[in-house]
Length: 110
Image (cartoon, rainbow, N blue to C red; front, side, top):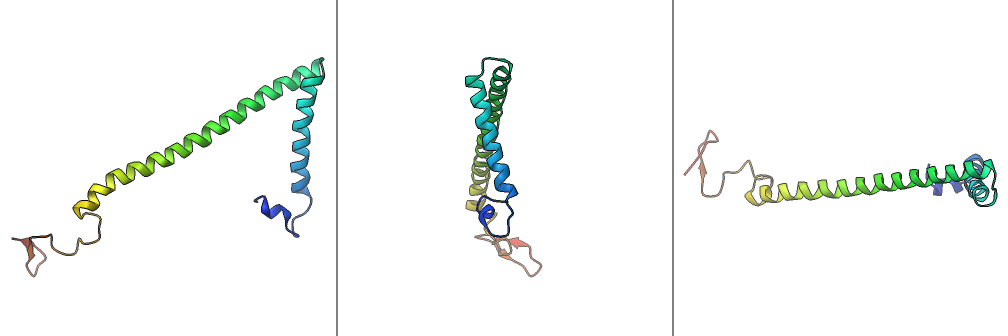
């Protein structure tokens, strides 16, 4: 389910209510952490710290995945460019190599 699919006619109100409810809970926990000096504020501050830590972990995973994908692409390109330059991956393997002739049995020689 994407964000644009939430605003079509065939989707009920539950996904939008869930998003609004989660936003309200996040706001209320932050509000309690800033304004309640009692135990509820203490718990809200702990939840805020845990939430910020989880957010940072998610960001780290997303960025490391992105960096790994870029690294894999660079590695493939670095190994494939010499092969392509040598003709090994250019799709001409069925023809004889340059400077060679083939006999009727497919063996190449000078």
